[in-house]
Structure formats: C-alpha cells, structure tokens
Image 1 (cartoon, rainbow, N blue to C red):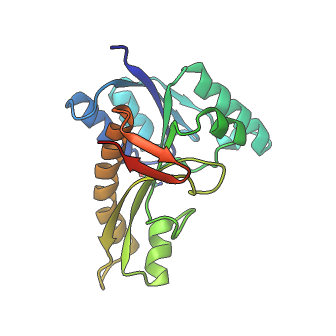
Image 2 (tube, protein in one colour):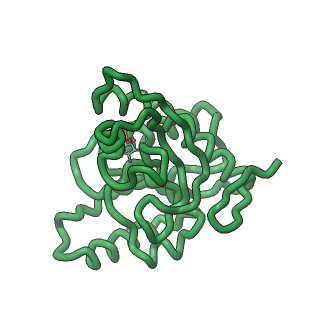
Length: 204
Ligand code: GRF
C-alpha cells in the first residue's frame, strides 16, 4: 500500500515530533511517512530533531515577512510543495490562514496543552494553573478557522497538584500529549474516526 505523506509544523522543542518519529521507527505508527518538517523560525530544537532523523526541513521565518498575509502565503506554498496528504501541528505557534484550513479540513491535526474548550491560545498550562483549575490536560483536535476550536479527537486529564509550577504541570501534561497524539494519529490513519459536525467518535 502506498504510504500517505505527512508534513509536521513546529515552533519549538520538538518533543511531540520526536515521539512521532520514535513511533514510526518502532512500528507503533505506520502507513505514513513524515516527508518534511516546516518551522516558523530558525534555530529551534525541533529542527535538530528533524535533521537527526534525516527529514527535510524548511524554515518559513515569520519575522521575515512584512505582514501576516505574506507569511500565510509563503507557508501555504511551502506546505503544498511537499504534496502532503495531511498535516500535524506540533506546538506550531502561528494561526493558520483560512485557505490552508479549507484545503486541509479534517486533515490538519493540532496538539494543545489544555482540556479544550478551556484555556485556548498561548501558555495554556499557565492559564490553567493561574485560574486555579484542579484538572488540566491536553487535547488533540482538527484545526478549523478558530483558535484551538476544531473538532476534538482525543483528550487526557491531568490532576493539578498543590505544589505545581508551570514547569512541573507542563511536564506531566507533555507525557499525555505524546500518548494521545499517537493514539489520534493511529485512529486517523486507520480511518476509524467518524465525524459528525463537531463530534468525532471511534468507528469499531
Ligand atoms: C506542547 O505543549 C504543545 O502542546 C504546545 O507546545 C508544546 C510543544 O512542545 N502547543 P514540543 O515542541 O512538541 O516539545
């Protein structure tokens, strides 16, 4: 069977990227190849992770563009140049343009470190801690036109402990991120996601 082509979009450390690469090489995930990693900035660890796995990388540095439209256009072109079947946003810190979202509707998967719809946007773990939430967590979802608002594929809850800092809470959430991200990709690859409006359920 022909492997599907995935492109990952990254902005930082690349631990979710590493988790996927490990799962691919270990056979836990199969049926697709990561054909490229696109970053919105240079000099990030995620690019080293990609290089170590010999995955082609491309940087579309958001600071090099005079406005958002120009960046959006360049990012969309970079994505299309790799002819992906689906996209994985792994800690990607930019909003996606409407045309890109439309082209990859239900084929663009994002990982977010909160139990959505609580705490969308940046520093979600800090938001949860400062709000005083007792349960935090993470969400894997399809991207739509909103901010962290698309149909939810998988979630995991993480209890907030009294002594937690942003760092300690984030570390426990990250373990769950890696787990549910792989689970969601596996269901997606096996065509086991049934989608009705916002509701995503598992086909048997
Ligand atoms: C993760 O917490 C992800 O959920 C968030 O950014 C972080 C990226 O981590 N959106 P990494 O780059 O995968 O290590």
